[in-house]
Image (tube, rainbow, N blue to C red; front, top):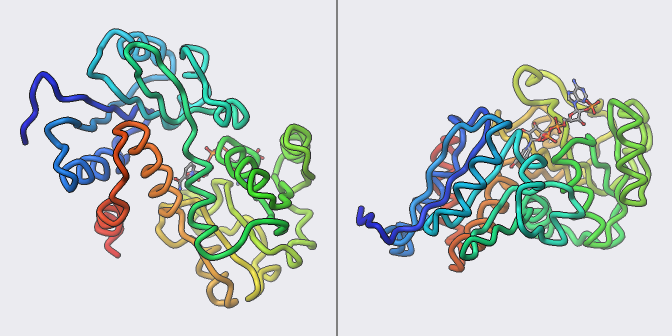
Length: 277
Ligand code: NAP
């Protein structure tokens, strides 16, 4: 390691943060490109009420070049920044902050984590997409689908939230139990917390609505393969795991932080190793 006073640093903040794979992924990428003397990536726990202080410190620390925000900071950080990218504004959340000589600009790369792996296997234009969930992640999903010309419908446990989000993005919002029609959708994207601990033995919708002509993307990545994906595979559907979102939101963030093209294979290798794939 050749860290010096010229080395720039990026920090991922969240609460909790210990589980974050971002430091391992980004540092491996720096090393593979031979820029690990120029950049280092760290992580630390920050309480939501302290994000303003972190942003202030960033503005005053020239080498603090990038801030990555996970839960619960993605919305709260916005009001402390100098500029917000148009996409992040529409999604209403920031997961990436870049320091341009003390001017802090917020971006959202989560939507790329959705769109990139999907476009590798299906054209999105005019496809009917069932977006399960209406929380923070679902906002990035809906944005990405609309940008790519797909036709999303939001299905959420709290129907009012589905309707509100639907109104904002000019698409339908219905209840999560209103799923009969899902069998006619081309793509199903789970962006609820169902499938993740402690709900790992549940699926967000009954899997009898899934068939072999569909693509099922579960953005939950712990466990690596959720019950929804296991059952979708059994039905012959194409499946996309949540680590794909993790990977591609990370490659986009890497490029914003470093201005270097992200070494996708290296970053994937770290993820695979972590999930023992
Ligand atoms: P959030 O804002 O808290 O939203 C949670 C969503 O899950 C809401 O729509 C909520 O419905 C729904 N939900 C929670 N428990 C449910 C249950 N028992 N039955 C039905 N619906 C339920 O969270 P988020 O930030 O959007 O994250 C959602 C999921 O995406 C999490 O599992 C997270 O780990 C995952 N995620 C993955 C990545 C990645 O890189 N792969 C990135 C971000 C997030 P209500 O509105 O009715 O409460």
